[in-house]
Length: 402
Image 1 (cartoon, rainbow, N blue to C red):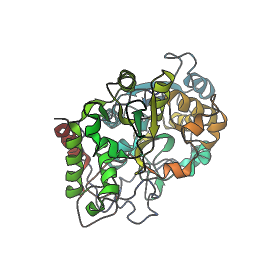
Image 2 (cartoon, rainbow, N blue to C red):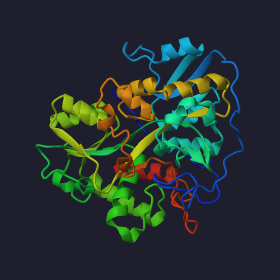
Image 3 (cartoon, rainbow, N blue to C red):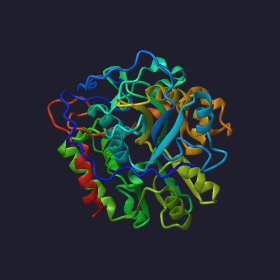
Image 4 (cartoon, helix red, strand yellow):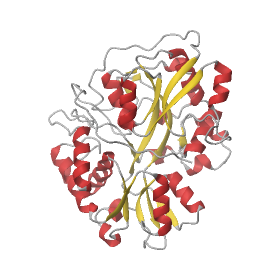
């Protein structure tokens, strides 16, 4: 069952002193596509070989990613790792991407399970080092669509090992919403039909959802990437969310609260995750979910190694372990996501897991724009304008919620 993931309080992006154009939508290769990343990260190198295990590894992880059996006796992939490698795992569970970034800056941790709204910050600040994927044997079996993407690589250099992914879906109560929605219009332009019972994800990154909708419905704005917004595009997205605000009954970050709201009828339509849909249906809530015709935003997590790692050998052993087929399958089922390793699908206890989460459905993921940190250098490759950085998204989110 997926753990609570609250993304963001205030974010200080003033330290992202980047030059040049940064690139790519979720479909772009890190540099192969037009407008590929143009900023130059600090000069750091990945190890060419591994040495003796240091005896421990300090991790920063989302709840549910490094389970040792203490929360659920059936969920334990840490103990076998410790026995096999001799690396004692010390895990700091983080509740937000911002917390992960700040913890990594301390230099006290060896690796982190960063989401796309944190990974670029860690690369640009020099807190995350390049990763030698050749030292992670199971990397070869990671789905191609997760390798060398804008949120985990720069200039054809990998900065982490993909862990899993998921899409932000449109969930609705089948007894309250008719006809069945197929567009984000239901929570934006038509939100007044469900006044007070619309729900939205409580995070500044939700601005990208509005931008994605406008990208498809307002071509005059010229939005090419929902994470690359110039001032005019940004203002339009903010205006749409301010309009929506009058119809929102609750902004959610705790998935259990969203399930409860849909069961009670306090919420009847809004953003959700596949694991929330599955859990709500299992608890007899009359809900369904759809990936709208405009596409959706989503998240892809990456295990990154600290540039100051005191235990790099154990960190690399962990990266290979967590993406190995059996373990990656365990995490994916427990957390509620699509695994990164293609061979993990044969290892899941629920043989329908990968089908439900679209693990190997390349066409499905092409419709998903994965979270990427907005920065002044436009991610769509434009060099004639300045895009609105994430710190401004945080400020706007406070205004939107009023």
